[in-house]
Length: 436
Image (cartoon, rainbow, N blue to C red; front, side, top):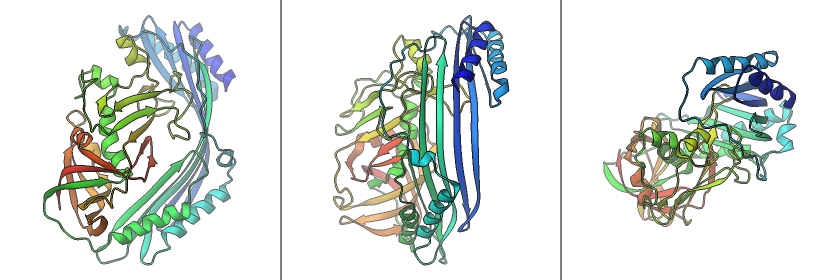
């Protein structure tokens, strides 16, 4: 990989780039699809691709390719792209600091060396768990294992390579009643530590618990959000508000509010690129800036936006190590790393006399990312009575504002989970509006 990347970097500089950057990734992927309770198919792929940025007279060009023999050609294309673009007055330079931290538990050789038969066996375990309760059918599911290498080089001396693994399972189930109920369960880890049978069983149990739902009247009440719901509802909207690109373009309600109390004084949130075993942990972000831990909220006080190298350069400050790429075929932009939500933990359901528990939400993507207003459908919701889950709720809409949620959090469970890039317990929020 190094030889390929260095040749591409050299080709960009020879073609006239003032600066150049090469992002090269290679991944081995095994994926298994499940449909109607059966393993439908499996795939094993080796994917490799390169993204190249080149700067000419302050203009940035980009090109990408997944063909080994065309990587130097892609470098020249990036230079040509820069030549026809206008100079960006906000451009400073590619990163230069290359002192990288030690990270832990992001690579498991057992995942790297897994054979297809073992992947099928784990998928079968998940299916067996989901089928362990009567009258529950698996409608869909998937299994994935990934082993990847990532290499970033630039002409300012950045040279960083890391490798990682991940394994995941997802299952969606439905009960076979006259009024069927559905549920899903999902987990992902950098290590070989997922119990796939219990993953499937958890989905089946949740669907069974959700049978014979009741209707409720519109009212305001305490809500407890499962980590899945927290990640969908809170992280997506709030992370947009602290994205420095949105702040600089006037698309955030947190502009100029650093140092303000914006949340419960018991709430703290950090963005941590160094979290042991974190799904978004790496030595560097996606343009080679060393990973770090960034406080976002400390005891309710707003502390920082998140920056990549470009947005940080606009303000003459250092990047927070939050450059993120969807793939090698896209240039970097600001993204969260491991978004860790901290609050004093308790037996939050037992401590709640009356309220509603929500496992998942549908429609968070329709929220207003500037105001924070949202209206979503809640799935697998239950009434809480005297510290226990009491009755399933047939249909429920939840409406509110994410920034009000931050202020009104008054409890957290002990069920800390990693959901994508979000690490969170269940959260209890006071005075929310629900419609049955």
